[in-house]
Image 1: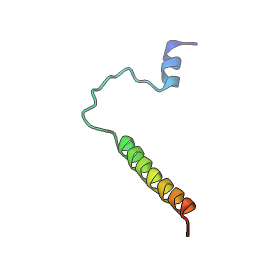
Image 2: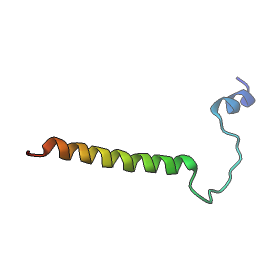
Image 3: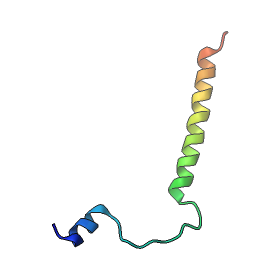
Image 4: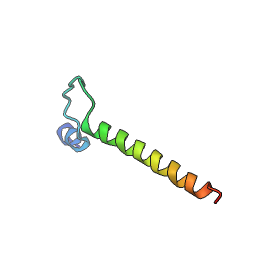
Length: 51
């Protein structure tokens, strides 16, 4: 298999750029994780509440 086909298939462009700030996907993942933890904690508290 030619090298050009292999590099295009794996999605890497061989261009390295330094990261200067978090990507939008990083921020979205962090927000989703916080929301999931909050929701699960509330559900567990509701489940274990003695009424």
